[in-house]
Length: 272
Ligand SMILES: [Zn+2]
Image (cartoon, rainbow, N blue to C red; front, top):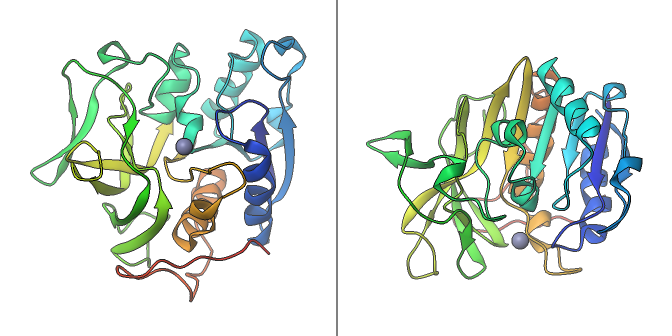
């Protein structure tokens, strides 16, 4: 299957992560991966016109200026008609004013998002519920290792994975908000007050349906320049690989890797 990574602007060093993401997708044996790079900030965005229709899944490593209306509409039409979309880490910061994009990612952060962007998703009495109250959108405490907990063990992306796994040092995004329509929260982590977080379980892996299409949203995967430790976590790797396959086809055929982290111990892997 053909997959396309989009990048070109990001508040993270995307040149350090895009080649890594590409290798991870190719490692599955399922994807051949192209990269479409936008002009830099201030460039002529009208020249950015990827042929989304040639691909089964689009992976966004992009957090930057709006695309042309034509390109934005093309992505919306692609997903609506059954295409797959994957949002990685700060890609959910992008496009605060693009209505359909926010419906695709479910919830997002920063970019002056507020309660006007939609509710938070909050775990209350065992259920994820939209919580409408004033407040900021998008924050994180100190980078640290944290336990990711499955919230949907029967979903194809998570089926067979441990209920809890220790994620490598990363930013734990909190207080994301958005339309929050048709979102299945796949996994979350407790964002502790002590780490500078929200004191809430925060949704970090999500599956969203949009038209006939499927979106996998991972809020994990911060990089500190060339240091991409969080994306070497086998939990990140496995969820990305399985999430991309699910977004592309609605199924997951990949085996659970033997080096998957336990609830106590981080497991890192270099890209092949
Ligand atoms: Zn980050």
